[in-house]
Length: 67
Length: 257
Image (cartoon, rainbow over all chains, first blue to last red; front, side):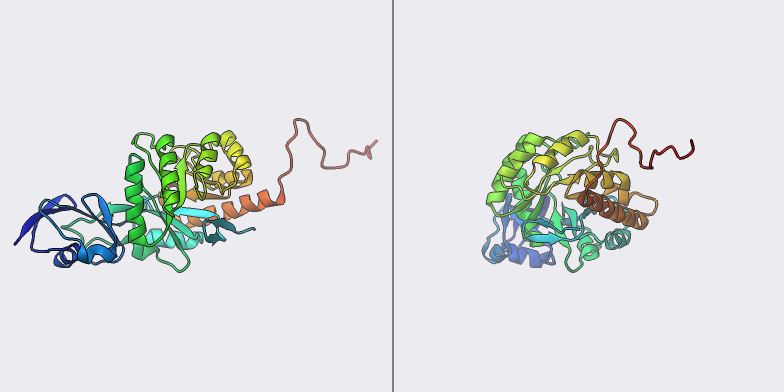
């Protein structure tokens, strides 16, 4: 069953049950990024067993230029 | 010149480099190579869901063997946000090195001493190699050192102002008292400012805007590299003392009379 979550503040309907499945669903490459769920950093090793729930807020970051 | 040790890393170059404000990633990459820097700072951003595939990954342009990444916490407003940002950075970039910067005021971007100290203490306990960007306050720098900072990064002048070492008298005290490396960060707008900091005994300088917005960033990167080497060499050689009256450098024998 699809649930609505937010990815970088954008609403998204997803069938993905876990963080790992979500990243695959949106075609996100997994190196050089970090992921947080509801403001908590989730290490890559836990993506597979981190379930998504309705209204969950996923944050995905990558490198940016800066001083 | 003596190498510089910060955390578990040894650096032969005492010029650290920021990656902001370059007009193109290729130019940034060439300037970094020309500078011979061994540590560069970078920031983090949220992936844009609509535009991610087109977005050029800046990491691709700075990746070089032996180059230490120094992710920063730019954008955070307090210690709690800084700790979250630090965890994200360590996960994304696989390094414990962290430039801790907490500057809630967008007009002057001055670092928040209280939150910076609080965050340094916690992040050091979490195993981060913390390099806090901080006010040029000698007492604060000692507190940061005691809290576990791997180096301190006092400012010369507000970020991006290119005004040079407006805090020189305080930097001198910080350098005199420090038991960790002192990296002068922010405000360095010309190679002469970098040389001045190194002559004072700073262990390194961090430069960004002055190179990134120069008419020729690659040439400017080389100029900074040379200035940092010259300043450090002068410091290690031992600068001559100043005097209020003339001190003759030629013999004053009266051979004409």
